[in-house]
Image (cartoon, rainbow, N blue to C red; front, side):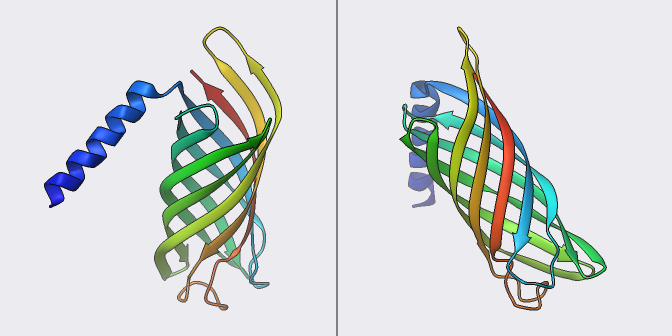
Length: 168
């Protein structure tokens, strides 16, 4: 059974690479504001390798590292997962990040699923013969259980990103 599942995943991956119109990278600086008032808004970085499946849908691998500050205790939130994005109208898209995240504050650690539901707006874009580029902003609603790290038991909140995208 595991062999069949791996074969299907490999076939889908191969199909994605063959039919992908382009591959791109997104890099951005994010500002995360947990809904728990004990946390302060902190910044971090996000990196995505993205495959455009067609003109409207893209699939990506996302990696994020964000600083956390609970009172005077510093920590980090690291997340790795998949991203699916769908264009709605020109320069506007919606998406979903499904990640595994680890939050560390002092000696406390939580590793749980993290979900971002986001909207993205392209502020500026350009296109050459073989390369495209854009400046974008993303706002996302973030959901993560964190009973060991957060006094409220969650790291729910919102995340604002300003980034650049380069496509090949």
